[in-house]
Image 1 (spheres, one colour):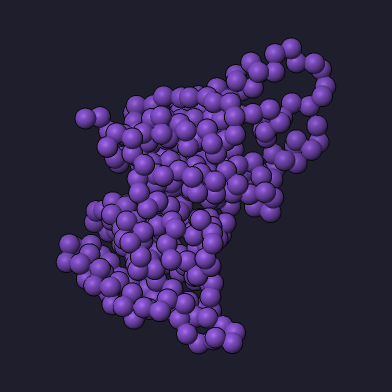
Image 2 (cartoon, each protein chain N blue to C red):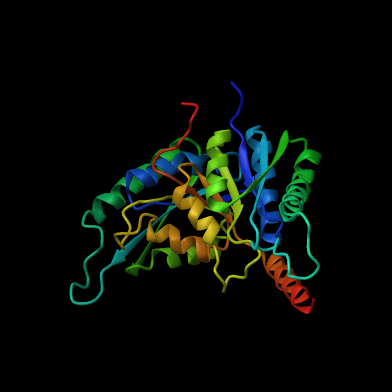
Length: 161
Length: 146
């Protein structure tokens, strides 16, 4: 009988990176494979694409960006010797995460408490929804103080564009 | 990784369901498992009474559960806080900060002091203010392989 995987949901944010670190440690401790998932949708940070130059294939860009984020999160897991696969889904993050957990029969879902938003903003909406709906254990990882500074810096940079 | 783990319990079966997960996280030498319970007290006109009518029995049950953990060789302790309702989440966060907890384990949908929320009010609030990872354990593991 194979070990049920741990599902890590990431959006590439610093908080998600922190969640990824915990997921990797747990995967090693439990001898479980890791499924790294990134869910994207148009106009969902950080995939929001401004109305500048026309992008011919928005779907493909979104999909590719999400794939890159998932691959980036999978790198340290593979380097740590954890059996890892990546998955990209388009849709509402909480719903897709729960569906993926069911599809993979995950023993645990790991995600950040919030993504690119700061604590003051609409926060924890994905993590709260997943905890609410997933009929599986969910590990919600808060940002470290370093993460929060990094997120504020990236928002400042984005605002300057 | 998770050296000091808090297991928050309101004496419910849902909280008990989370205990094996707390034990799994707190396995090994040097690991510490702290059972936490907040005796929430009603304020206002009905003030002075605990929210949970069987508060005494809950405490007795928790003391027994901690004893069982210790007999299994786990460095376990019980911390009880008292707070006006609905202060459990903040008492828990305060404790987590004091003891440097690395994880908090809670069962969702327990007997929260605010009824009507499908996601227990403790867990909901906790996710917003916890200084460390929170493991939320549902009443039933929706494993499709079973």
